[in-house]
Length: 114
Length: 114
Image (cartoon, rainbow over all chains, first blue to last red; front, top):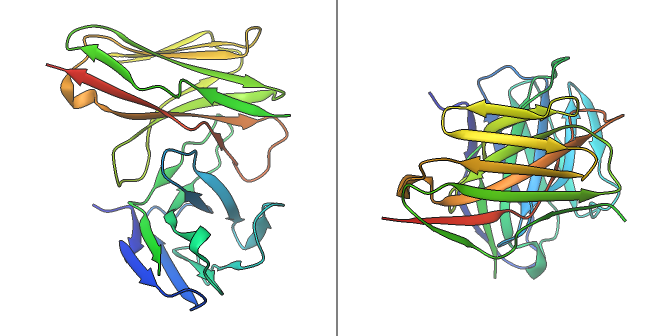
């Protein structure tokens, strides 16, 4: 039944050690998003893919990269995590419809940086 | 500057009462607005969408209003239950928006006491 799956649910990494978070979907949606959410804050969009087109938010640090090898999978790479990158990372998908589009979120990956 | 603001203080109400949550925005022209529920440690779950030409939308015990003159949306839960306790996020989709981007508010935590 799981529609948007994120692995792992919890990730601990060391300061400066690259880490990759993964997201997969069974919905066949054409848009995938990555958000960063810190405690009691709004989810902040990092980037999104519209099919294969990558769209980076202007204020997303260069430290964050993403890959979407096919419709079902999307990866978030953090090249050199800092302490400030500790957060919940949420993957979401949507199917663009003329009348509007809700987003389907995964359960999130909680990243801890030591 | 562009802002989306929700009540930062937690809302505590008694079971059976109506909960009303507020979402205000400035310097946006939303095509529509959405409400999501987020439980601790989980991803947001879509609840309702209301378009800029709609005044009100209902779904079971939920009601959303949208006033583009006041730049405000109200989210109501009638006959509230302890199971409704969660954080509720509003999110708007700006007009001329590519890829279905949503801008989220920080959320309001609702606690329903038995």
